[in-house]
Length: 194
Image (cartoon, rainbow, N blue to C red; front, side, top):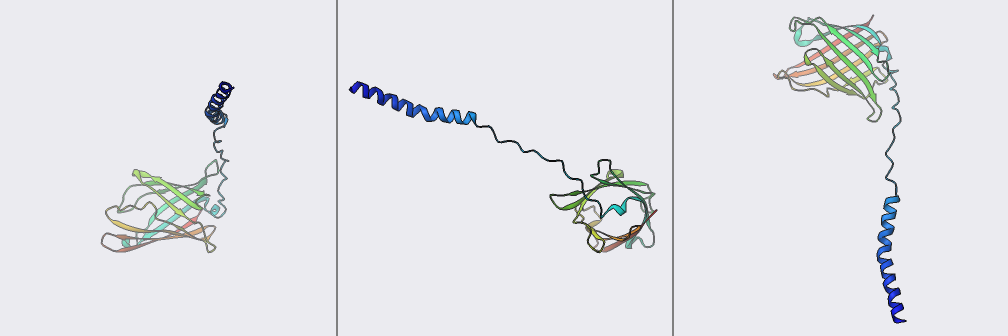
């Protein structure tokens, strides 16, 4: 009887010792890994507040330090085929202080997570930039920040650009920058459709 009890005790100890380990191994191997998330297709941005920009525009701007000499450009704005971007191509023939033609392309979309508009641009001669905006207010003002401003040896800071919708066929722009000499230069422009 003692031997039987001893055998039962040994068997019980073996089962106790082995049981949980076997159970853990079984549980771990039978538990499926967490399911990887799936993502819905992002909704297309609501461009209704900017739709007036579609089409061809003629823009003229003036910088205080350039006096009465205008900078002229032709802008053509379209939607990309997928509907996620508004694309603007700006061409300029050049000015007396930069006697060469240039082209710049802006792509604008809306980041629904960050709740902001994004403008990514690239252009001739390695030009690039990006800026953000919270959108157009009820007065037709849309402020684009100087997010990608970098010191270039001449300009030390920039205010960004305020775009003001005057009508469906006209808008104005206003910005300013500070030079290394400490001078603040204001730039204003007018764009008309057609």
